[in-house]
Length: 381
Ligand code: SAM
Ligand code: ZN
Image (cartoon, rainbow, N blue to C red; front, side, top):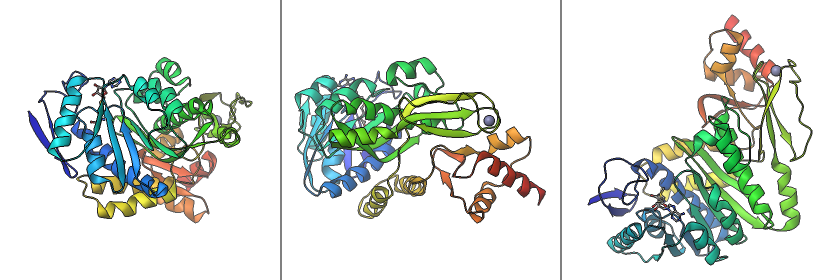
């Protein structure tokens, strides 16, 4: 057996060589950052609801999330942990006892769990192996109005378009590989959730989302109402991308006219979607997460704060971003310093911020032509 410390808890699980779905009970130390971020997001959401919140971790593994949520989040109500594996559940029990917390433990297939407990939870956490796509419909059926849906996806190669067909199969969306494909991936996942929940008259607001290491994670505020759902689906659309000049533009609407050619150079446009073109970061929510972090003991706090500050500045900026090295390769010039480009864009009155998706990325409302001109001007200096 092995014992580790994370946040305020101790967790025990059978020792294994390599993190994989073959481990007897799943525990991945690299996901501590994800769990730390989750503590802040769930606490921030609890503050929005302003009452005790009941939560279900549908894919419990060692039980670490459930135990941490119970121990580290204020005004937490009932915590339920589900896992299809009986051994995982044995360890959830051991870990609950080890940390003196009460947890309801279930052994059901995730979709059955969700459907059996319709309307019971204020927060549903879906943290499966690979894709969450199989479970989103059951989550949509089961989740109550004014609740939080936390989604993890580790099939980033599908969402980012390394492989096209799996993305079409799992998310009913076409991806494309580009410098900002991780953002497209987040938007395809959010779009899939929005479209899946819509039939239950439920709609999403993305409170916070990030792509880190090998996974994507998002926190969706779920509300209910047919009119509001119709309105919200106006955020569904496509991303059009020109590989020739690097222009990109979002195209709103599920059945809108999609141009074939680039308005700037006439090159052929590549299309990804349907996807969520609405906000993927919420300033107020992220600000709340940042202030809550003062009261929490988190081993990865510095990294979490770095992420949160970047995501905060990414809120209310245009869809998609540009990669400076890709633009400079396209121009066949060497790249000026990123900060210089950002400053120059800002001095010219544009929005210009970094993105957590890439150290070479800039989010700006400047057109590709303006960015290219600014780069060429900077190189003359
Ligand atoms: N949330 C955990 C954490 O933070 O450490 C990790 C969960 S792990 C990625 C996925 C877990 O889901 C495994 O423990 C596995 O036994 C369980 N599982 C796999 N398929 C399932 C299903 N269809 N229904 C319920 N549990 C399932
Ligand atoms: Zn073009």
